[in-house]
Image 1 (tube, one colour):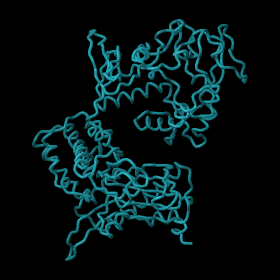
Image 2 (cartoon, rainbow, N blue to C red):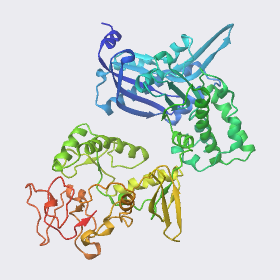
Image 3 (cartoon, rainbow, N blue to C red):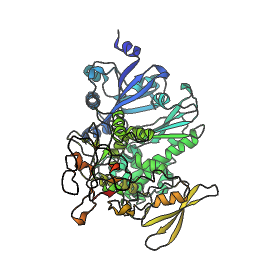
Image 4 (cartoon, one colour):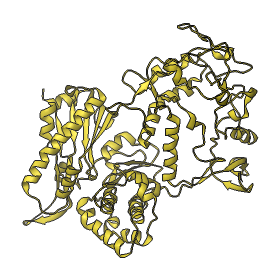
Length: 614
């Protein structure tokens, strides 16, 4: 049987997708399981890797794609070089996911676009559309021995299409809704958007390129850095500037924006000549580098807004945005400028219990583990007292939370290959504790604080919320604030108020010491109760059994659970071991003095000096 026929007749197949976009920053490789056929297909992502291009290769790609002179030999060599780089990306994906090369049923490889002519042009007496991608598919086929589909755009252009965007079919399969109008905006080198009307059929789907994505941003930043950097990492440089309104107004006069869909564009339009006009204008008007970056970043956001407002048949009910390269973060924030967020803290941002968390975070994200096993460990270790639905959500979402923190920049402990190092936590059957040395909380808080600052979210510090206010419908509509330094009162109004004021350890229940931060005085509990919110578990106070007992200067200081996990011994008031090794103990709550503790997963000790509340 022909390999393609065999692949088509399977109910389920493992497919690798490869993409190197107009940002020319590297190769994305995704492993998916595709079940079913046609519009009834279901897609499950099993793995993803990104393989960056070296600076030398990226510069050569951009040179060949600039439209300037180049010889045929350069394109010949680049075609096979990209084929080899795609092979390396698939090999890295196999290593990441643990699949063998022979298990792959199909590879789809878009190729690297070097020139794209979506509208007919006359050449040697003939008029036609054309497009040109490189990345030899035969190199992939020879290495992996499976069918390879490549040069996607060529077939679309040959069928009198524009050759882009190519994602609407897959987005139809994944995001179509019976009740909502869904828009999907991609911000790669070029931005493109797909519109899925409620209950749409495949023939109802339409999509088009909105204009530049990261392409102009990256080119401008490369110019500003003298070629030392190729992108504005995290949009941090642009975030420090202000939009230059005159330049933005000039950019919004771009003829491409007013062209009605269907339409597509690329580096041949938004390439070196377009960027040169921007740089020349900035020099004439003496625009600072940061203001220039803020302006071209906002330009991408404004092209998206313009496209939705002018060319969508109805306003989307849901906008799903994905970024294909650096700079997307700043673009998204500019696009969402209508969202008015403010943080209020009676101390400073970062003064929180999180700072003192030393042990780590548990998440079942290793090959020999699963959220289901994590659930069993936690439910059984907690004497089956947990709320099943809450615990299920916690263990199922934990791997995503770790990945989110990692993506923001949290420096979790990793081995030389970049894989997360995990250790045992209390009562766990698998190593799933992710830590940042002994300062996990401080590292997480550092990154979260920097993210708030980078996004320029206003933070009002040394100001306490003292009372919630309600509207005429009885719903919370803001809060009364008091400046801790001047005593001045102010009112902050908001559609939504989120209380995240920490715990109550600084109330020193039963005179126990605490390592809670100095803001943990139950403010949020009191304000919520006064506003009529039901309070849960008020009969439960947790005491950590391992606080320092001596010397007096550190009485009550945290001795983290991580210390126990690496073999430290607990002692009682007489200095003797509090535990008999290998003997199972009942919950510590049965031995705590006049309190009930959230059940612990492993063992208990008699009351120990230095017991701390939290």
